[in-house]
Length: 65
Image (cartoon, rainbow, N blue to C red; front, side, top):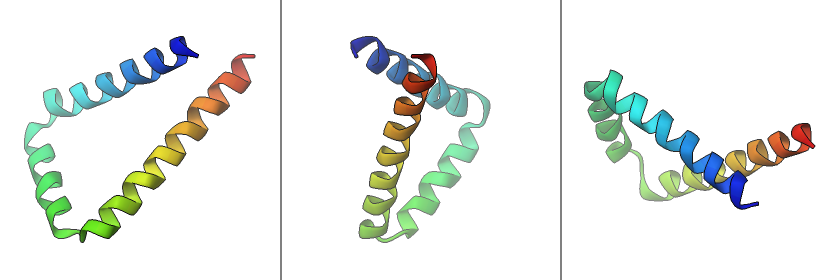
């Protein structure tokens, strides 16, 4: 279980780092666009992202087993 969490965290950091390294101006544009979305909608998007992330990790573990 801990190895899965570390793997997931590492992959998130890689993707985040790539975004900042390859397109920092795009990140600023996306942050400005996020400010325009109402807070409840941002919260819902965050919860949906969590659910999708858990599903992907679960699926990866299922395939690897």
